[in-house]
Image (tube, rainbow, N blue to C red):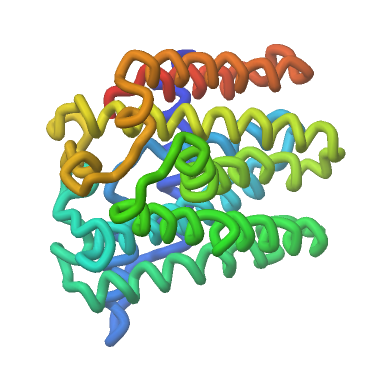
Length: 294
């Protein structure tokens, strides 16, 4: 199976789960639910859910449990995109080739839609349908809260905003992206180990894989922003340079940034050696991240 087929299969399964967990409603709250569905059901590669599903596959986790965890992480990821696109943040008009949520609806509805998706992610993880073991559910909730909060994604986004007016060196940019992007990707990989009752050494290998993959992902993101095509990426390009932000590309240059991404990809795959061929879908993801055009 190619990575494209594997991604499509994972995305289709996660989309069905999201549609079931977040059905359309009637009544006064319909507008915010419509905005939540618009944010989550509007495409996307579903990379984080893919990582949940295939890390869970290493431990033969029940498919329903893995899909619910995958849907939860996608809810949180989509909430972050909705809020990042707001005028007070990145002020973006386009996401996944469509108007952003605040453009399709309005700013207040977009804020509420993001809030709704964030809280629903934890509602899904804490539900007994996600796993019969309450300790597993509690660990999933704790790990995602940490990855998504001030010690993770939210903290990284704050540093990113400050970076518009501060000069950052390569170490600071690496830390920024480790928090902003890497911790959620790390959770996506560790979630399979949590669901599968994996031991500390095995979970550490998954987290190490994810951290290298996450940095490679961000470097490629910076490359796409610097030289990509908006028609392919589905979002505006050149935003980082226009905002004067320091990025991996602005510090390393295009060629060194490409080489760094490839090196990180090799390091990421090396962490999977203990899993043998069973981890091939994760290795496919590494190759996909390094070579992607959108």
